[in-house]
Image (cartoon, rainbow, N blue to C red; front, side, top):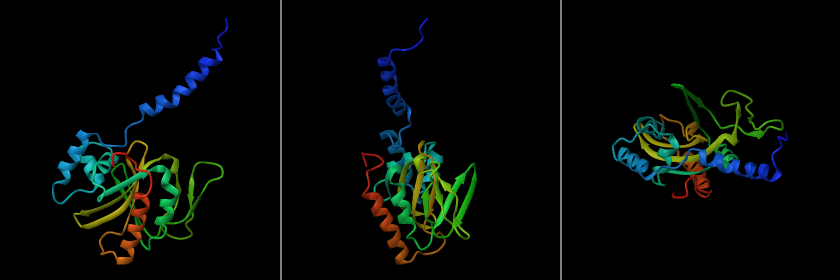
Length: 205
């Protein structure tokens, strides 16, 4: 018995697979109902940071970010990773925040440079001394948002990197607990303008 499929059928199945996977992928953009819930939550004062709002509403963080007005959050797709990372390198100071399994990691210091691996999909950070180091996966980043809002402890300015499911992978903020200088604010605004000029993470925004 011949178990080989006709070439035309194989081609049809292969062409259909990406579309099926795309259809199964979770949306990184809020529905009208989700956007309403986010708006109601942020009508309260003080407003929670997006990662706390996401936990409160039971949605991925990207749903919260995509529902906020552009003056609070503006986002692009993960394709903008490299130029955005290079922009973060221009910040004089930064706080890299990683939230994982209830743990909170805070790394203070300048954002290091890096380069794509020649043998994998890693983006290898170059850190000669103390501070942030490691290996990133830009191909797994689904969206990147610049966030500006008033937090419980004062103004919050930073950039959030989200995975393909819409959950935050890590954040880079201006350092907390101190008033940023005009130069630091200008450095953040430069990164924000860069993100705002890129293709939107959600076309409705």
